[in-house]
Image 1 (tube, one colour):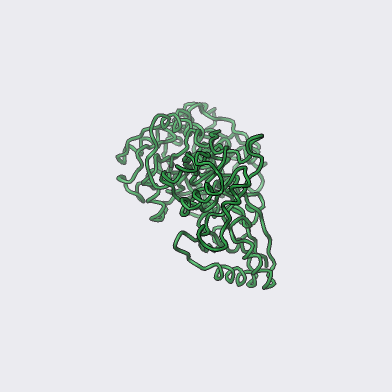
Image 2 (cartoon, helix red, strand yellow):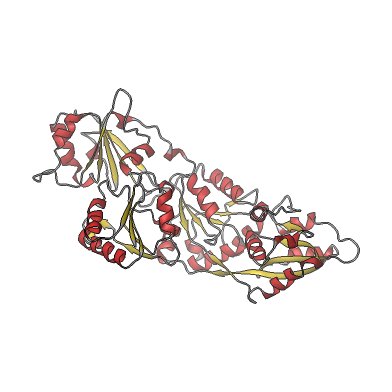
Length: 494
């Protein structure tokens, strides 16, 4: 039994430490606060218990004493507990109090440091907290305490220290803090900046001076930086091509990671709204297993999607059984899925659609050789019919089925206010429209290829972006090009 006090970092889920990710993967329960990036919870097992103990100004689900008691109780129960805290557990996060409570109760605990927002947020805004010659030290201080109360932070003394001042949780008391810093000797024209939602796609920076920053519309959560370095604007986060954009990904959760990672790396805020889930064939895979058990009868195996690859190869005990079989696939994505199993496709058509596979497929030699096509239950008959016209005997087996999902109201609301939605198959279009409705589709619709586009148009959608190369990279490139000159939608937090 161990309670792990894990720093979640400043907001960008990519800034979680490796140790933090390892612990989330084995957690029985995750007790998290409101500043933890919600995407981090996806690193935990699907059946993990999630307990939100987040605090907001004027509201707390649990008091700190109750959180301490919860950690002790769960630790004593023998569970693997991850206490996920924004930033670093020991930097203004009350991790020290939680550790002390666990120590007093005799419950083993581990502290996993996180990247503190005090350093990461200014860096994301292009503000180095130290600068050679101009700022050779920095002070990190909480702005949460009332500057007028007895025993509060000695702001005058902090002003006299010099260097950079980084203030966490200071928006609500900024006028008083600014006044006391000036009373301590800082000139009114000292550069100052407030960075809201730092490291996240909706990051926003306000630059002013110590005297004028309070005139700006400041909002929490923001990190305030005071000092000469606050005039620096070595901007990099905001220059990424999808910064400030919210993009909906409708792929099944098992497949979405590559697309999600690509979009986030380009600065987008991603709404994961799986419109479909991949399920077993209607016969439980009996037909697929039967065909594969007799694979020597076939000259070719045709796989039309990454899902088809995974479902088919999962039924083969020894892949050497495919040694004498040639493999054809639709698209580089399917070929890549095959390559993960150390198999190389013998045929990948230039265009990533079923029709192109049929065109590229050879005519059948004498003797009516056979082809096995493993595909989704609802897939079109283009491949099978086309190969039969070329003289092949074709057996089609159901490798998997797709079923619609039931997204949460919160996810649907987030999707409705997105800049764009991506569709990677006809089934994702149908699933999304069934769940959200055509009237709640974001203003830009991006598809991976012509078949998906045709389905979208059949359902009454306008297709704005269609990938030239029908792959994840092609879809991302086309979306970036289309959004380049369009303003991002205005929304809370971004």
